[in-house]
Amino acid sequence: MTCLSAGANFKVHGLLKELKNEFFPLGVTCDICGRETFGANLCTNCVKTLVYNDRETCPVCGRATVHSVTCIECKDKPPRFKRAVSAFLYEGSAVDLIKKFKSGAGYLKEFFADRIFLKLKNFPTFDCIVCVPMTRRAKKKRDYNQSELLGKAVAARTGLPFIKNAIAKIKKTGEQKFLTRKERSKNLAGCFAVIKKEEVKGKRVLVVDDVLTTGATADEITKILLKSGAETVYLATVASVAYKIK
Image (tube, rainbow, N blue to C red; front, top):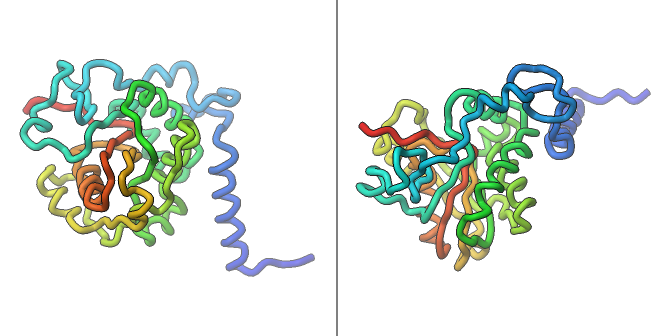
């Protein structure tokens, strides 16, 4: 019997985990309550707890609004991306699912990609897809970049190319959870770089990510993509924070 070293065991474990995320996307229990579903991600009760972003939205940032008109934030400081769309509101069960997606449940990429794809059916034409990157250290700690898994899954549904490692995060950023939009923009300045400039040059690029909050990350990535020659940049996320009148 051949014994594997600790290092080899770790590598095998990592490989098996990656293969599971890639090829076995569905479980047999609900990802919210744990009840048996026989293949679906959510049971019939829990699927009703998700709030779909399918009512009035800002035509620019795609966040839920009272009326389908450009929100005050997009009027005051228009984002660099042309248009954004999201499948859910970032509240309730969607928050729990996205947290689970970011902490080991990579298979949820299929469920989320299906919902994003539906939102893209009446969306402007784009040529390729990229994702929001993580630092190498952060990706190594998590074992995967959830936005990369999502980007690949969305690309598979559209039939368009996913440009892997198109953008790199070259600088670690501090916690953004409690920062304002202005503070987030300052925190993100200079932390991304376009690596594959020739592949985005002249292209209409769709950036895929998990959540749109203030839009600061998307705006910073759009800035460097446009600077690298991209024609137009769009954004698609699993969920977005509803716009609230202050």
